[in-house]
Length: 405
Image (cartoon, rainbow, N blue to C red; front, side):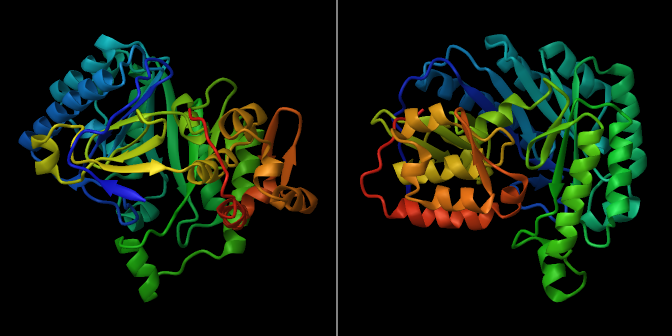
C-alpha cells in the first residue's frame, strides 16, 4: 500500500552496487501511444530548473545512501537529446565527476540528435546512446505521432556512424495497426544493417488515457489480433537471432557482451535510484524493508521542494517483492538464479509457489536446472496468466519472509 509522506524517508546506507536513472521529462510533442510523464515544447527556463533540481536530487540520494559507487547510469525520458548542450553537460558532468559507471546510456530521438549532443556525451563519459527509431516507415511514424521521419532516422544513424565512438542501441516498435510482418522485418533489416550492439523491440501497447487507445476504442483503427502478434514475435525473434542477436529478454536482443546492464538490474530486482519528475526508486529502508519511492510529477513542487520530501513511499511486503521478482525475472532468457531466490526468500521457488511451479513445469511453460528458474518460449507467451496464478499462490502464504537486497 503506498503511503504519502511529507518528510524524507529513512534510508539504509548502501555504498556499492547502485544504479542511477535520471528522467528528462521533455519532448518535442507527445506521441499518440505514450503514457510516460513528459512535457511538450518546454522553454529553457523550465529545463534549467528541472536540471538544477535533478542534480540536487542526485546529491541528496548520494548522501542519504552513502553512495560510494554507481555501476550503471541511464538518462531517459522524454527526450534527453532535446536539452540544450550546456544543460546536458552540467547534468552529465555531475555524474561523471563523482563516479565512473561501467555502463552509461543516454536516450536520443533522431530528429533532435545533433553533433553537439554527441560531443557532450563523448567527453563526459557516456558509453552508449539509445536511439528511438521505432520504424523506418513514414506512414507508421505519422500514425504513431512521432516528431521525426524516416529521413531523420537515416540522418541520425549516419551522424552516429561518423562521430560516435561508443556503443549504439536501437529501439523499434512492432505490432502497429496496419503494419505487416514483412514491414516489421524490413525495419529490422534496416536496423541490423547499421550493426548496433543492442536492439530493443517492443510490441505497441495500448495504454488507457492515450490518444491511440481512444482511437482503437472508437473503431478508428483496429488492434492487431493475438495470433498476428504471436506471429510477429516469432518471426522477428527468429530474424534477430539469425542475425547474431541473442534474445536475452522478451523485448531485448544483444550481440555477445552487449546486453543492457542497467535494465538487467530492474529485471533482477536490484536496488536503483530514480531522479527527476515521475521517476521511481527501489532502495533499502532503514527499518529493513524495501522502499519504492515515486517522485511527484508536479514540476513546480519538484523544483521547489527538498528532493527527498513529498515522495510517495511504498513499503514492499515479502509477497510483493516475490511477485515482482517473478514478473521481472521470468522475462529473462536465463531466468532467475536459484541462489537469488534462496538468499532473498529463504526457500526454493517450488516451495514458495505451493505447487504452481510443478504445474507450469508439467505444461512445458517453465524449465529449471541446478542454477536457475526460467520460462520456455511458450511460457513467455502466457506470462501474464502465470503471474496471476503465482499471485494467488503467494497471497495464501502468511509466513513469507524476505532479506533484500
